[in-house]
Image 1: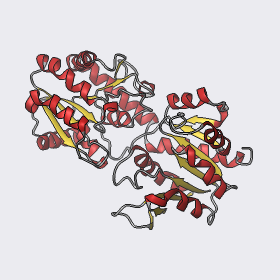
Image 2: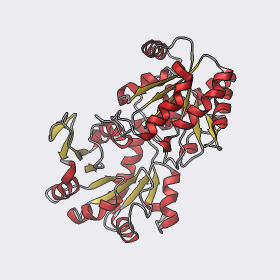
Image 3: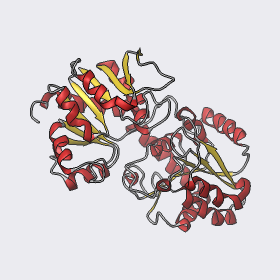
Image 4: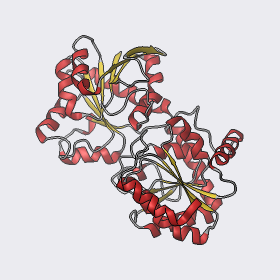
Length: 383
């Protein structure tokens, strides 16, 4: 089949500036391209050419300012069996009009059918023009079906994954070597490392972790909280919230480390430095890809019961799930549990790694998506 991917207008592909969608595309594209001809549309970036073919994948890039219209124009000049639109239901009808003979697969990585993001009229038209829908979690699937009458057979949950070649578990010889190297870079020796990776935004909750640190340090004087991330993907500028985080961290001195933005290729190594990884999401998280990454690295994980997070992290089986997500004391207790029950935490981490090996490598994701593409191609004339 001839397949087109239409990335969002936020970040370029490949993921030279990060982004969960772009990282997923990077991971699955080689597998899709082995079986089909794949063209990826994305915005331009100074580090990337306007057009290129790399490893059999064609990349076509347009300026951000005219991106959607440029893509629509390009679709009128090419023939695609399947067009995969990433996370932009409001643009589906525009692309369908440009390529009426193509099947449209719309994947949802956030609650994009919220009335705050799309009108009822546009949403209904997008659903009509989409041959199939995929969602990154059952939570996102249900946000659509609660608002609109979407047949069960038209929507699939496609969980994301990781690259098996770059995520090695911490208990391997290579994992231990990388752990020692990154700890040396961070200036950490025998400390208990509590790691946060994510954008520095209130929705991600690093402020709650900082407020939990007083209790954590009263129990573990050698604990260190490492906060890895920038205000917005590859940006390290400060806003009022980032300033507040540094204010909260000040009393703890060198017990809190800010790394700023960490490029995606360094995340697998950074994870290996941790004794506990914490996803402190305060919002209805669709299902943050960092869950798959921590699971793949074999790091004991704490997350919040928000959105889709608990769909792949089972409480006290593959991680620790916090219900009282806004309460710093709940995080302090969860961290204490994972550190004091070390053998149990390690068993959770090993079970989590096994789940990744069985279900959450990018090869698995690509297989699930190719099944959707084949189904969409068969039924494209029905919607």
